Length: 372
Length: 255
Image 1 (cartoon, chains in turn orange, cyan):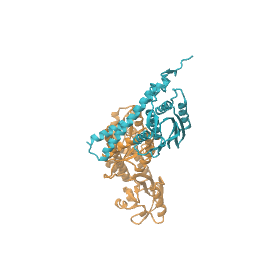
Image 2 (cartoon, helix red, strand yellow):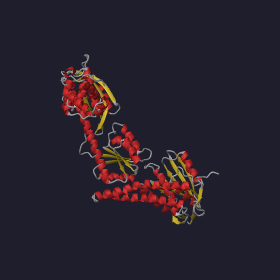
Image 3 (cartoon, chains in turn red, orange):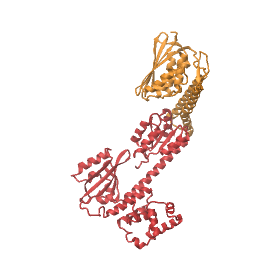
Image 4 (tube, rainbow over the protein chains, first blue to last red):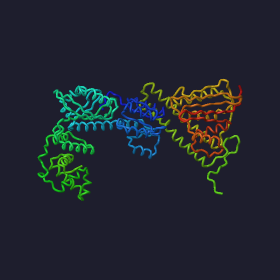
C-alpha cells in the first residue's frame, strides 16, 4: 500500500460529455495529476479495477449506467471500496445531493464549479484517504505485533511484511524473511503442490486458501505449519496474499497449543481483538506491550479477584463496561448519575492497575467475569 | 356534457402555417419541456466555458500551447452548443405561436449539407464521425434552408447521441424523381423498441396536437418542419442494431 512519492496521483474521471471531460482533464493535468478518462459508467468501472486510482470523479447523470450505479458497484469490492469518490453533478437540487450523501459519497461538485473548489475538494479527499490508510496500517501493525500467530503479506514470491511470531515459528529474522519466499521454506516433498496453490491464489484464481505443510526452520528442524490466506489489497497494481501461519504440534497437548499459550488464552486474545476492532480504538504501543505482558507472562495472574475486593456495584459496572456500554448507558441502566459511574470506573482502573478502560475490559475477560 | 379538460384552443387558421389546434395542456407541457431542456442543457456548456476561463486566469496564460488552444476551442464549442439549445427553443416558440413558415429559396444542397455535417462533427469533437454522401446529380434546389437545417440537425443529433462514439452516422441524399429527393440518416446505435416506435409513428401520423407523451422537443421540431415542407418520414429500427430514418422532400428543382 505504500505509495512512492515520485509517482503521480492517479485520478479517474468518469464523464460522458467529451468536452467537459477534456476541460476537467486539462484543469487537473496542469496541477500535476495523472488523469484517466472513461466516457461512460461501464468503462469507468472497468478502468477503476484496472488502474486502482487514488480518487474517482464521477458524473451522476449518464446514459445506461449512472454515477450512482458506478458508486454502488465500486463500494462492493474490497479493491475499490476505499477509493475516495466525488460526484460531479448538474443537479443542484437538495434532494439529489442528500441522496448521494446517504449513499456515502465523499463529496459533491455542482456544475458549474469553481476551479479552487475542485482542487480543494480533491486535495482534502486525498489527504483524508491517506490519513485513514495510515491509521489502518498502524492498527494492523499493532495487532500483528501482539498476535500469537505468524502474520505475513506476500507478493511476487517474497514476504513483504512479517511479524515477530512468524520469526519465532520459522527461526528467521524479519530481515531474512523479507528476502525469502515460501519456496525457501517448504520441505521438498510438499513443495510443488503447495507452491501451485499459493501461485493460483496470487494469480487471483483462489480468493482463500488453507494449506498445511512441513516447513524448514533456520536450524534445519522441520515443523508442521498451517497457512490461512486471503487475497489482499493490491500493492503497485499487483495482487498480494495476506495470511496467518501457525505452528501445528503433532502431539496435541490438551490446552497447550501456540507458543505456550493455553487454548483459553488464545480465545481470550481473540475476544480482546474483537473488542478492539469493534470499538475502532486506536492502540498505543504502551497498550501493545501491556497486552503482550498479559498474555505471555500472566503478570496480572497474581492479583486474583478475591484479593482485590471489588464491591458489588463495581463488579456490576465492570460487567457493563465489558459489554461495551457507555458511561451514560450504564448510568441509565443502574439509575445512578454519570458522575458516580465515572467514579466507579476510576476505582476499577486503580484496583486493577489499568491505564485505560480497554485494559479493564481485558482484565474482565481474562478473569471470566463476563461472557461475550 | 362534461367539460373536456383537453379541449382544443383555436390558435391559428392560416393555412400557410402548420399549427391549427393546440390544447392548453399540450402547450404548457411543451413550455415546461423547454424550460427543463434549457436548464439542463445549459449547465454543461456553461461549466466548460467557466472552467476554461478560470484555468486561463488562474495560471495567467502560463500554460503549454496545447492547453491554451484546448481552452479556446472547448469554449467555442460550448458556446455553439448553447446556441443550438437556444435555436431549439426558438423554433419551438415559433411553432407554438404558429409563426413557423415555409419560405423557399435557391440553395446549393451540397454546400448546405456539408456545412451542417461540419458543424455537427465539430460539436462531437470528431472530424469524421458523421459522413455525408451527396448525390452529384443534385445541384441547386429550391428549399427552405431554415426548416431543412432544423429538421436534419435534430434528426442527426439524435442519431449521434444514441449511438456509441466509435460508430459512424451516415447521412445521404438521393434524387429519386424529378421533384423528390430522398434523404437517409443511418446509425448503429441503441435503436428503438417496438413500443417506442409506435409512440413516434402515432405522433408523426396524428393530426392531434396533444399526443406528446414520451416525445421530445427534437421530434416536435422534426414533425413541424416536415409538415411545412410537405415531406414524409419512415423509420426502421432494431433494438441494439440501430435506426434508419428515411425522409422524402418534394423540391422545385432548377438544374
